[in-house]
Image (cartoon, rainbow, N blue to C red):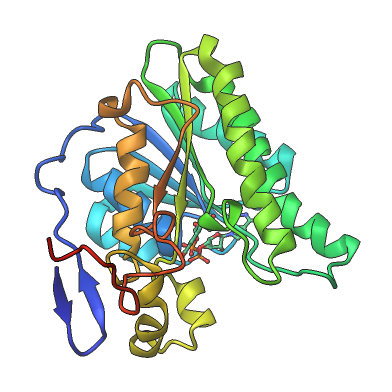
Length: 283
Ligand SMILES: NC(=O)c1ccc[n+]([C@@H]2O[C@H](COP(=O)([O-])OP(=O)(O)OC[C@H]3O[C@@H](n4cnc5c(N)ncnc54)[C@H](O)[C@@H]3O)[C@@H](O)[C@H]2O)c1
């Protein structure tokens, strides 16, 4: 992995050159596709040959997409909590291409509360993170054709799998996404649609950068001990797994959750062993 020492930005060495063309003629929709992990997924799908629609409540990446991919990437303003609008947008896209192959449900409401959570806090979290994912799935399924290699990838989180302080609302939605994914996979098998989810730990997206006061060096120092590999993820590393799950190489994977967490879920209270030693290790 190389690093830009001025910005602190790391550039993982991914197989982007080897996978070009694997999504030729595919039509892909990514919600929350104008920022962070969603934007990186849009870019990887497009780099691999797909026509991609970035659906976002805040359209903000049009120029970047146009420069890199021309008209093959389009941004559409959409709030995923508006079920009727989701149906309109999916119908409009399908009328242009006659099919939708892939949906990535990635948009998120990050607000998070614990003991002080109000009814409004709960409603906001579930409206985007769970109902929004269901809205988009209901909107695209009629245009996914059996035998055409169609799939859905939902974004969950390690927050749905491990306890974290004051995260009742956000974590409950992410746990909900994991179980909803399994139910969707079961119900949509007859349509030939695979459904999976991805659970990242911390990836350096704009949302995480904001939470870390934009101080990457300090946050890496604090957070590195949470991970076996001792570092935060780059958004491209999470996107690479989303895109793999939508590819033919993942043909036998459905109803699964793939953690992309640098070993966060594997490590125990001893962390990386800095403060523990065992009799017998020298034999
Ligand atoms: N970054 C991380 O470390 C991390 C860790 C675990 C899980 N995740 C999950 O990954 C996904 C992407 O996170 P990110 O960090 O890249 O976030 P981000 O804030 O960079 O991007 C989220 C995008 O969703 C859009 N959005 C928000 N509400 C919307 C709505 N109602 N309708 C349509 N679009 C909407 C935002 O405008 C934004 O562009 C989320 O589901 C998040 O929960 C991220």
